[in-house]
Amino acid sequence: MLYVVDSVIRQWVEKAKKAGQAVSKQAAPGTYASGVQLVREALPVVLQDLVKNAPETQKEKISKLLDIWQRGQTFPPDMTASMKQLVNGTSNSKLQGSFAFARFADAV
Image (cartoon, rainbow, N blue to C red; front, side):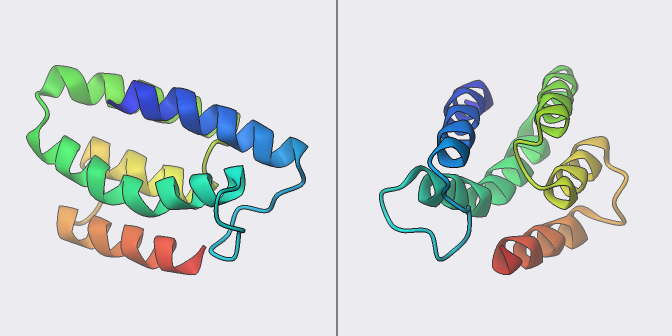
């Protein structure tokens, strides 16, 4: 599922940039920027559930995808860093990670 999200979101990010659309909660509905924002808001919850239930072998694949997103600046650096902490289990707790995601989604 994340590979589909990856393919779509990277295209939308590029198209939003080319169209001069700023990704934010104020992005006009139906625009690429609006679509990216919706994914930004939903992804933390989805990722948290995936990490909670994924076998360890899948976590490595998730981590590699996050590396791609980090290099390509698909998502803001703070969001990518929080997601990586969640996957790597380096945040203080998974619950705190979800609060960090929620705060991040509210801020953008």
